[in-house]
Image 1 (cartoon, rainbow, N blue to C red):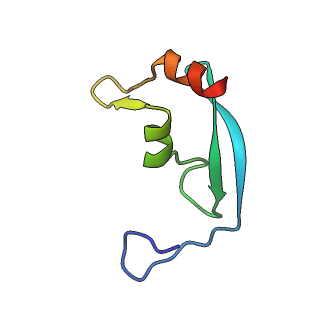
Image 2: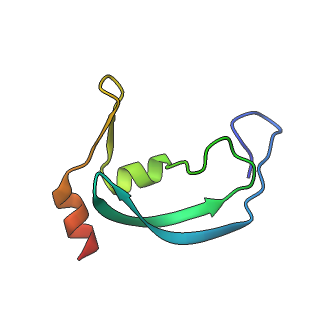
Image 3: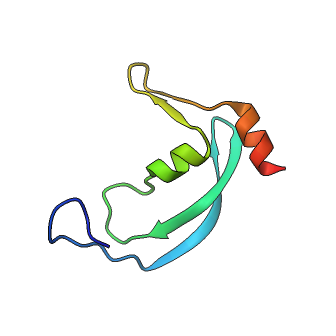
Length: 74
């Protein structure tokens, strides 16, 4: 996969569906396995939009409407 830096690529070795928890709410999504990243997990824009997750950078918090998680999990 090409990165934002022109001509630089990362190698995706696998993809898998995982359940994960944010603020005690269970969510699920597909993750790409990429060796040697600087972070263990990076949650992308698609996941944030799917679960209507908002980031509050001023207060360093994550905002999730629990009704959205409940509806998607049923």
